[in-house]
Image (cartoon, rainbow, N blue to C red; front, side, top):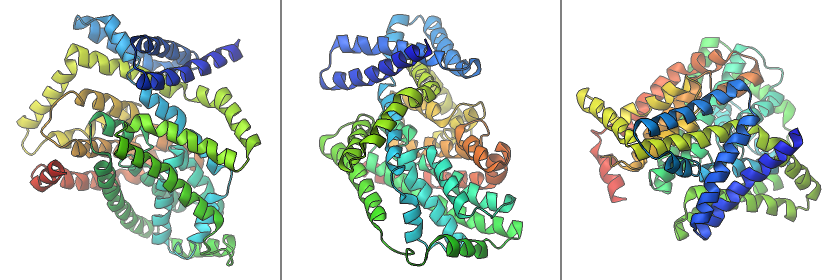
Length: 476
């Protein structure tokens, strides 16, 4: 019976995505209706796979949506039909993007990249910087999985270096790097969604986010210097010792086939996405999944890794989709909330309330307030993705006196801080499961000072008194 339910769930969720793309190509009311019904069925089947505790959030969101529709005398039928197809593009993104990680399991790309960069990574500051960069690059492919992947690799690289000082060094580099990805990495669902829904320029948002991310990486490197001083430990000598052991001299600095292949793959995949987005004006949420799916399949076919491909496809249907049940159920429920807020007019009232606070408090503005929304909700166990989806869904229908690119940065900066500090969302939980330190220590204790400085830095960039920013964005 369990296998039948799992097979049915896999068929329904994939058919949901297929019909979404068919409707984009051949729009029709019947396809829209089928999409809504499959959305409802997907939610029901997702909830079956969840424990009672994990069902609480999606069920609460559903109840909240019905409450809004009933209290505002809005059509429940319209709310359901629109609500359960609101998140289809994002579910497609969440479903397909992680399969690109199959490629990284086929070749020792990370080892070869570290060997190539061996001469550069021979001091603690350089190693910390390099660790953050490789985490961000891998986040394009692995999303949350980059935290676990990079930590396991570094643990093998620096295996005998233990203690809180070393775990602070490794953990803060990985967690800070991944958190900053939400500012600019196109395959991170929350970033792709918020750019799309606010109708912001993709390349401006990415360049802006990458600039802020790079500055924040340099800030993190500076923080690591003082943290190393605090622990009174010489990390540089330990790193040099391990580099000498692990990386063979003949491979150090060598531009191997794997390095070239990885760089080429990165350029082809994301170059194709940018090209089609720029030339054909295709929506980024709609474009990313098929591009990644096609390149992943071509990789295995070109390399004739048929057995590995078959194994991964079996894993996709038997385990992968079931593991995504909670995220699917939350996104489907959040889509219902967004539609309920927009149809009832409550969403506009909510933003009007925030704008009233902005006008009432001196030196306060919407760009200063928005980061606190994901920050506060993350301590209630709600991750950045559903929060940004909800905020973006509400903001998209409201005219605001700020360029959308600045709104994107404001909201995503809040998700960065959420991922750094909250003990209740995935990044710190994954890291703690790897290094054995408490969730509070890995997140809040190690990163509170860094998060505070990061917030002030972003606000200095966003502050409305900087009329140059607004003028530049409007001209662009």
